[in-house]
Image (cartoon, rainbow, N blue to C red; front, top):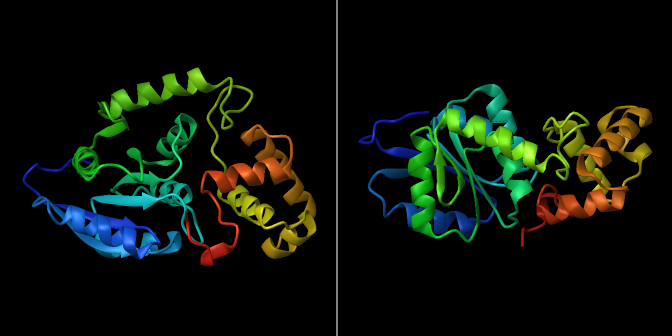
Length: 240
């Protein structure tokens, strides 16, 4: 995405906390070149709002009801919607950043980011740039080179590479199964919920454990909860 510097940047905020949404809107309202055009409270609302509002930038929380932010980013990327995504999250580490950027985000920052920094990010990504850390802004070609290098550097440890070192995020179905695992469901119960066979669930669980580089379901559940990919008590739970 590349925009004329004179055009106003239209922003969609996706977060289920009203106070946080309000704070973001208030901070962005101080900028004459940025307009908040809408809000979403959960991941499932996003695609419809994007179609209706055609935002230039989405501020997207990771920990959302129904569908997490990384799933939403991947969905938008796969649909080839012309929108730039900035992932916001309370959990921040290098591997999570890499996962978010690979999922389709153009930038990634902690939720306690300074408003001035966030505004800079919005302007960068609206003009087709990628922010890989606070001091590094890349164009599309540079970004692809950076991703390749980072994946190679982390391939020995990252939980999203296969035996050949290829970066593999969790699939939509694996995310769904992982959410049920965090709620304590066994394979038979998960199979019933999703309308698939127990063997299929077992196969997905094997893939999940391998991708996350953990030994068992409990470790996988702890990682998913800690990173905000799923919610322990479903839609009613509030993010910390």
